[in-house]
Every structure is written in structure tokens, then in C-alpha cells.
Image (cartoon, rainbow, N blue to C red; front, top):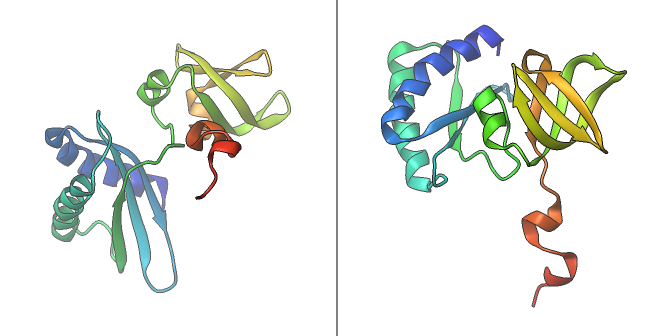
Length: 165
């Protein structure tokens, strides 16, 4: 879906979530066969429940039916952003300073587009990622994609404690 359409949807959907103390984290649009998928990722101060997803799906579904911004068949899905969530806005980056991240830039920076390291700071519309002891400054507008990058052992514990019984 064109970026302009995503921006339009964002402006329509975000105000619906604010009274519910939820925030829109990401919008994805994926063409799949004869029916496309419009996926919304939401989050809240204490995470997201299934009831939150159902509520948002009903409210957003009704709005999209009324406004009809997508003129072909699609399925609306609402989900939590997951543990390795997308980082999109400056406030997302600020919230997760000190966390491991994976960042892909729009253009090459120092000959690279992919940076994996620790998000060490956000200042003056730049994120600073510590990559193996080197501080890499990336303009927010140059970020193509970014997400948290928690290693499996932090997500699930060490391998030796992950045995099935």
C-alpha cells in the first residue's frame, strides 16, 4: 500500500485508540491472493489483551466500513506488537533507550545499511546505536525499518532451562 495511504489510515485510526489508553504501533498492508490483509499493531502501558484487540477491531472496522479508504476486499487483523516490536516514531526510540535493536537505513551509512547493537540515545532527531563499541548516529528520517532485537536467551531463558518435561 502506498505510504500516503498508510499515513491517511494512521490519521483515521489513531484517535480511536487514545480514549482506550492504547497506541497504534504499526500498520502493515499485505496483498495475499484475492484478499489483502490490513494488520494493525497496538500497545498500551500494561500490554495488550485479547479484549483490547477485539474492541479495536470492531471500532476500526466500523470506521473503515463508513469511510471506505480501501476500495478492494481485505481482512482486518489487530495484534500486539510482540516482544521484538517495531520502532517507528521518536517516542518509541526514546522509550527503548538501553535496549538491543536492529536498524535498516534507507541509504548506506559508512558503507552499510544494517546496524545491530544497543540503542544508546536519541537526540536532535537522531538515534545513536552502539555497534560493537562504535557509536553510530542515524537520522530518524534515514531509518527504513527498526525493531527491538532481544536475543532468544533473554526471551526464553538459557537453553539448558528450556527443556520440555
